[in-house]
Length: 222
Image (tube, rainbow, N blue to C red):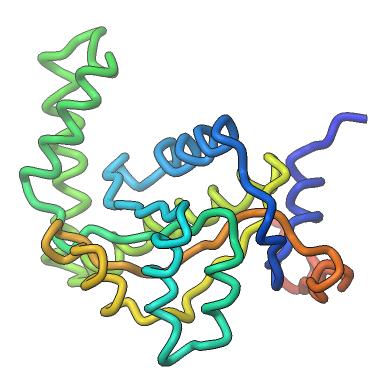
């Protein structure tokens, strides 16, 4: 029987223990990178950067961000096959907007009528950014929300690949930013996601039933 997207949604959970000897294959890691790159974002602004730690040294560098304030998270980071650092753009500059626009042109999104569609796209993206910069004054929060949109897409996607994951805000983002020079690149870290394969004996969360509020509590039908 073929699994549906809701089957993966029901089955995925936050992993509490990884099997440290199991590694995600190179082929599946290519798919993981695609999930990060192909995520939707408002106006396709793509305000993100990712650090993928795959070596023991790399994972130890990420784990530094947990060792002082969140020491319970450090072993999980080190035991995972790979760890993804999710970072958000600190300032959506005109340079960034034009970079996205140029990529859209390269990918053929304006081929039907570039003289009309290209400036329309740039104008629309600039308009929404300026609303958040100047009217709502929540531009950084808006950019961060796009990264969390990526996170949701990512968690469901890796579940469909049979990969377990642990979204983790229990890290010191200042340590991560310094460790990987993210601020110098114009980004600030938000969270990390260790991924790999659960240790089925040690992972107590694996056997617990999923708990969510009922539809009647969260959905209004009109």
